[in-house]
Image 1 (cartoon, helix red, strand yellow):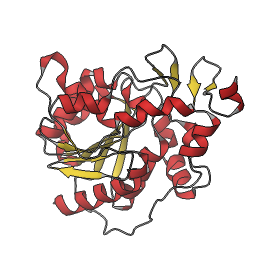
Image 2 (cartoon, rainbow, N blue to C red):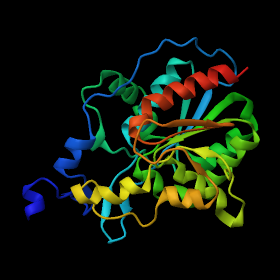
Image 3 (cartoon, rainbow, N blue to C red):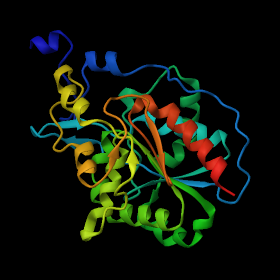
Length: 284
């Protein structure tokens, strides 16, 4: 009761899940972003497409059995998309089974006109995305039309995607086709899919920026998460041979070979700039 009075209690939603407390929203969510509207020399080549793998799931189970009301973090998805669009790239939106994209709408920056514009521009695709299996059938033989695969963050990227064999197929296709892979925050949870069926982890030895477990472990104290995570993503990736480039929730971004990663929602603008500039520099 005291936690509720002080604004530390997570908010109970109608489906029984919990969204962040008033205090957590006050501390961690802003109504405007730090997006920089940069004018890039637009890419004019044939590798103009970027596949974006979103989650279609909302409720992430915590260690205590409670469910966190999540999805993809809108800033982590839309800021990189803004930069990539301004650099001349187009998007194909996909979810594992073709169900609508789920966003953490409680984190949406309502006073950011640029973010609202790209959200509305892609709303039809968010509501009716591609199915990953259909993408595999239709596009694997067209790799020369693609620049990258992007997996946005948000805790929702931890639901189902790390266990999805189609995600693994697409990440391996991107790797073998010399495409870039872009992700941030909890999005690198998708990379765990490459270990399915006793396959060797695709990113062993890579440098990577990922959301730190230490922060996830602290957030239940002020009601962001309704409990502790069932496992630590950073620890799991480190155990698979990843070199972690950050220890804090900050603006760290990193390029290693064809992998571009960022550490947290705070890195969304930096990741977008890095991804746009790297693709423009490296693509013929």
